[in-house]
Length: 370
Ligand SMILES: *Cc1c(COP(=O)(O)O)cnc(C)c1O
Ligand code: SF4
Image 1: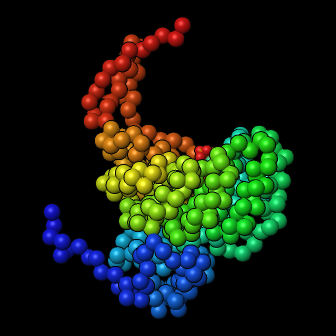
Image 2 (image 1 turned 45 degrees about the vertical axis):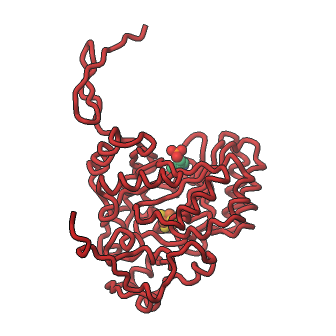
Image 3 (image 1 turned 60 degrees about the vertical axis):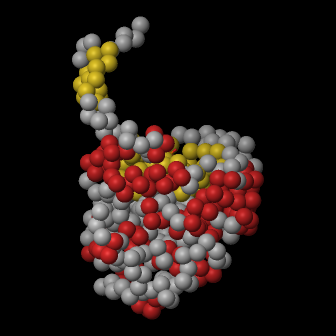
């Protein structure tokens, strides 16, 4: 163990931004977000070269709750929310890495798989993640409008094969309760829509949004699932735990879609700790995504082997419930492809050779199918 004095726990702005608490009105927290260079200089002690240029291209929003989770410059929380000059200096990657636009029959709705659609209902988020694969869209006006939402609903109504609708964005939980109710109500009125899912980072990035009023609305549209998005164990706080507790107690199964990010969570110990903590707040790890090849995010990319290494370090060493599916969402619209470390070593005529989690080799007979 290192002496604790080497751990830097200074919070350079804690005197100015008091909130790490579990109370606070989410709208007022959101309105105190840092979204301009001036506010950034006033409210933090950090310096980011070319900040104006970066945020002209990719909006910044750091709300006081999430800002309060930063312990020091460059730490995993900082890297997720504070702009980095690499966003404009490194132009590797694609504007629309998953070809969502070409697979959109109507704007804002992607129909890639046979029985389910991705439906963008908000272009705003409680915090603009610097690694976002929809960097080109989030926080920009005109992307999601009343008209795109009406068209999306009409598309779903007209396609009986759609039994599962994933609301996404942006963050659907940044809509007002009234608007969210309206959309959910219209979706529930479509007989072939069996399942509604909401993808939201709010339980992590602005947990105060998860009010009893909100959970009361959500619980009236079951079966409703939520996939949230935590990337680092320090994001699991009393406030985020309370948000997840409220959702779980409203009968909403909670999953987590974590993104593998260099300098944030590309470490088996960090990831293991995150997955275990998620289970303790009743969130079941669902996907671990290889970072998408979105332009402006190359400084977060990890080699594919890193994800496999992390998966090998989870499986067998901890509860199977802690183990997400590791997947790449293929560039060009190929969809999600799961990847596993190589447990099947070889296949002979009479037996297979398998490796267990500790690397020990076992034989398993080939069973004829007749
Ligand atoms: C990820 C995704 C889905 C949902 O995939 P699941 O594996 O069912 O969670 C659906 N549509 C699109 C376009 C997606 O990107
Ligand atoms: S919350 Fe999701 S959609 Fe919004 S910026 Fe973060 S990753 Fe992108």
